[in-house]
Figure 1 (tube, rainbow, N blue to C red):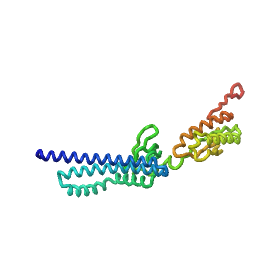
Figure 2: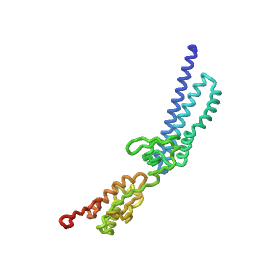
Figure 3: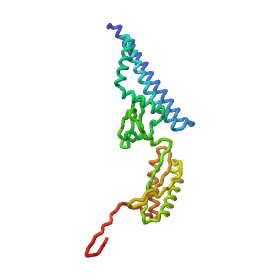
Length: 277
């Protein structure tokens, strides 16, 4: 290779890098503009917006991979005839696909997740015994961030049964144990009053889709009657509502002097022929 060929190669390489870099910048700019328009769209439902943002995120990844692959092919074309190479790549790809069924299954699973909108970026899901928020979704994997900060990377082909905790609406549940010595009807009235006051609280009312309900008795335990307070909330707001509702229930029971029992043992000791506790 003489000096002239080297300069031609460097020129083609610089041109190729400029095209690939420009294509990547253009794709990122276009996707960012589309995502920004989605976020400010007023007439679009949140679920639909989330689905489109996830599709755009995956589409950007696919387009970037195609741009890099196309750039490599153009670069190779300057040295060898790529037509036999493409034919051999096709044959090798067929042979590889027969042995890479897991990869194909992951890709098909990713396409189905996107098309069916099973979950998207920002959703909290439970899958394969793992629970957390979806941070990234590609055609092959789902990236889930656990509550302790750990990052789980799950192949989409392994997603068999998935529970979406933040789809459409959520529910806050608070189970309260009432002592058998208490007047159950009075305790229910106290809990209902606390639930109604909670529904009118301007801090939490926007998170509620329905006023809280008091159900009970649900269970007759060893030392308490279980009563449930539940509230239908906006997606993902049930954790915050549950914590606040527990605090309100505890305060109401303490104010009305309603005993909330806890496990305890009573021992019978016999001394000098007398039974004492």
